Image (cartoon, rainbow, N blue to C red; front, side):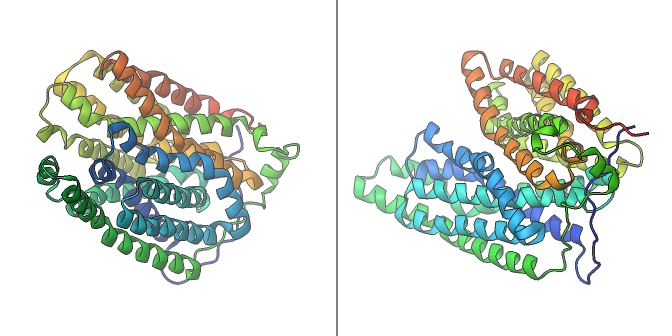
Length: 429
């Protein structure tokens, strides 16, 4: 059987919160910041008078940071280590949030985009540090279980964040939009300036919270994990490996993660529009994204209860990918509420993919773990690109037929889960 040994470390016990609880707080922050983008798109479209294409640069600026800054993030971790690297990531996010203040005061869209890109950069550092950290901080066979707990923290924040920001930024927005149509240029500028200023207080609060949390991370008893040290099995397996590209299972894992993130974002972000295309009123369709998130949280709970006691993480990934194929085909062959609910249930299929792909892709990397993690974080850019491809297919075919893009995605993930994660592993007795 193949070796699954990973980097080893000596973890000191310290008083206070457990490392898993602290990392759980960080995953909550990930979800809170990420899912605020759904509110920022319509908000900035009005406040900065944008067309649809321009408004969606909110998502692009945020997610493209994962692609551009993931490798520099690994350099940050080489300098500061995992623990202090997380603190640095939080400070970078605080800088991005701080930029929202001059952006709001001047109502300059490029400043908002710069703030989002810097926030994405900080999150790239945090993701590069925290995902392998929670993977390594305990037995390898239960890594997916620990990441599932982190996923619940992330999705709970994702459910709260849009409500919090929308209650401030989008309050009375329908009436404001109507009023703007009848105002002259001077009145319109005053109204838009007032609207733009609404995000100042929420982002000031965010800056304060991020700075305080970074200080807490720096002074906390979080143990540092030394991924440069390898046990004898991993050392023997990596003797002739001088490059990250000597680990084919990691390269396949990066592709799988890229496709998975694209599928997750697509299932969550497209379902409201898809419901509308199926002649379902928006007053009802607006709740469909919440259905997707709820089904994801159900999946996380299943993972926590079942991995590794009843099922291994790679078998859980196989089952998830097969479920994704079945639900996609069902969505393509049905219509109305049934088809929409098939897309919502993709949250269940997607839920255990992130928790399972990370440990399988990072297995046996040893001293290459930091750079391997940064490559996986680059895969998050799938959330920026795959939904755009779906949008193009909607224009050419239809909102339902365009979901056919999910079939090759889930089939590749099934391949990685069944065979691809073994590629390049040295066989041991």
